[in-house]
Length: 258
Image 1 (cartoon, rainbow, N blue to C red):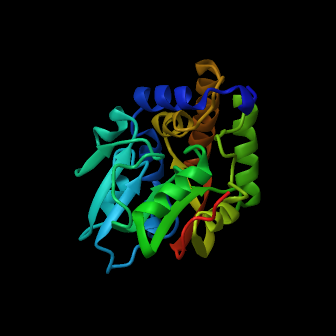
Image 2 (image 1 turned 135 degrees about the vertical axis):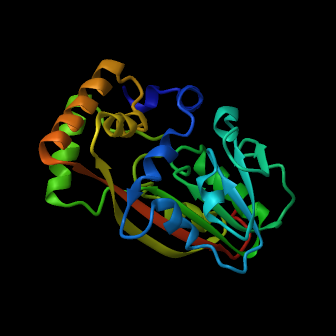
Image 3 (image 1 turned 180 degrees about the vertical axis):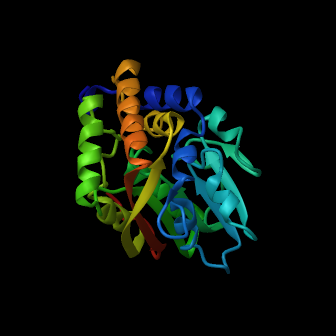
């Protein structure tokens, strides 16, 4: 299905209402060394930060990592938000119910590629951040990958007959420019290869069911999950790479006018 024909708000609402916490269930089991993507994200949060807004919080994996901080989770999907620790607020990212400059940090885990229109979302995040406050986010990446990773991911997409899709595209190639326009100075942009280990059919279905695949029939998802599980059983486990990009930016000025 062409991305231009997808009703993304409706697709995302149905996806996360039907499978709340699916992204978190996958990424909480993806590791690079001693950390998950969520732990990597919160390492960008200063210990001196007192008020944190977790944007598109889902069921709250970032809040659970931010011990000792006061964290408000915001999400527009009640099914997702129901599993998040408090305090939590159901809200659209374009109209946050907070005063100007009240937060020290805004975090966003795997949300910037689905929040639209992104320039307006970033401007709203800048509005609620104090000057000198930090936005820390993780988004999907296309690298780093190893040769074996490419074979596995190619086999997976062949059986799905699709690749994961997002409203803002894959790596959000214009993210640095959009952050600058919203009043941020980018401090860091790094990429990390995480590994999700498949050892059972449940593991395989957890991966496939977390992918945004609008227009992909359940039968193709089942076929792809079965292929992953069969490979895992023949190899005593199968590594699936999940490349992640972490970007941090400081709010230094007012958003530029159009």
